[in-house]
Amino acid sequence: MKKCFFFVFVLWLHSYSMACLWAQREGDEMPNLQFENLSSENSPLPENRINCMRIDKHNTKWIGTDNALCALYEDGTWRIFDSPKDSLLKNISAIAIDSDENKWLGSYYNGISVIKMNRKGDIIKRIEMPAFQNKNLFINDIAVDKNGNAWIATAEGGVWKADTEGKWYTYEFTNVPEFVDNRVNAVVVDRDNTVWIGKPEGLFSTETGKEWIVYDLMDDVVALVVDRDNNVCAGALDRKGRQYLSCNRELFRLAKRSSRKSKFNFAAFVIDFDGWIWGAGQGLMTYTEKDWHRYDVSNSDFTSRQATCMTLDTDGKLWIGTADKGIFSVKVVEKIDEEEYIAKNPPLEYEKPQQIKLLEVTEQTSKPDLTITEIKQTSFKIGEQTVAKGQRIELADLRFKPRSYELQDTKGVAVLLEFMKQNPTVRIELAGHTDRDPDPSHPSYDKIANLQKELSQKRVAQVAKFLYDGGIESSRVIEKALGGSEPLYPFNSEKNRRVEMKILDTE
Image 1 (tube, rainbow, N blue to C red):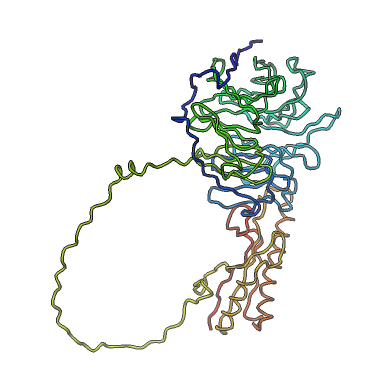
Image 2 (tube, rainbow, N blue to C red):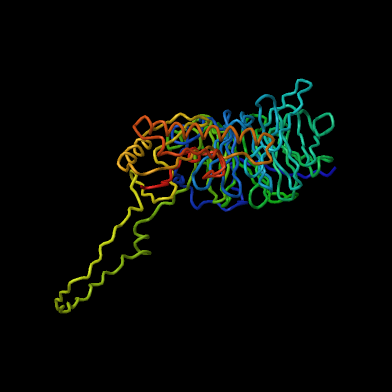
């Protein structure tokens, strides 16, 4: 079996100057970072502990928590997978996204399992990991290769592979002689479709699982990433508990690149699009040309004391999940030299306007020929909204709790009641909506769709009752239930849970 001497030298940062494998920042000043925080206090996140996070090619952030799977879309809208059909999406410990945009989730809810979701967010498969021999199969990491095989790193059950036909393959010390034990910390697949495994006894790789290559990184590999140049990068602990990072330039080619930082435990690290190294643990660290710089509660707006995961979006922006403060996004803010900016951007010259010559106008008076016709009102003002006859609008300031017809705010209904009183000849239609129905291929589609329609009917009835109690005759209101057939967004959203109004008649 061929072995490659992947890591040969481990160099102390303060003892040696190293040739850079990637471009580094100029100078050794501490970069100025701008942090933005999303938490359960200022966003739909169900809790502040983030277990894992991945970002797809549409820049959607997929976030795993103990209570639900969450999606933050590029336009800033959220989807929280907490409906009855998503009841399995709890205790998410790992996320991977394949080339077909399917999501693979590791879960420890009602047993250890792998859940596969399609690009719409519907569950299409749940594979329960068999519990045997008292092995801890808690899923630490998942990666999907180009052939569609899912590789699962487990806490004490070795490496598992689920192929496209649903067959399971297990790789542990009983059938892989190179493995010392069954603990697996991390797994990643590079662009050459090589699978890399990080274990307490070192680094391993395989093409198919039949043959394994052992590298001379004989330390505890706790994290693995692949950068844009196909560099495979490992974060490891040496025998004295000191952490370091090492990367190769390309497969089977040596590169001397390593760095250490004591008294800082990395939970995750990434190499950004410019080749800068970022590590997250008890704070955030980034490596400049000469040293590591640390950001924490003492010197920045990064207020978490423990990061759990880290990833990059399609724009190269850094996103960090934490154990206590939700999610942070990080942006490098360049300092602006005022004199240099003025030199490059001189003020615009003010041009004095030319004097305008006034023309002499002769006043002429003529008597207009007026024909008076009756004008019927075609549009109405409802609060701040303008609506025409036959136009359907969403009632503002009207929100419902998930899976409930209880009104969270009656302000919008009160405005509608006042409008109906001021326009006694108007007849309206009220249409109730819920979160979207599942895909028609869902095994419980009919049941869920009917429940959604019943819920929308109850929501309409709640709004109509408010009007009736306020003195509006029931003959002036038509109630309609649409369930989840007409969502505004193709995911669960507060904006889907709404009641719309349409003016039917004005006289």
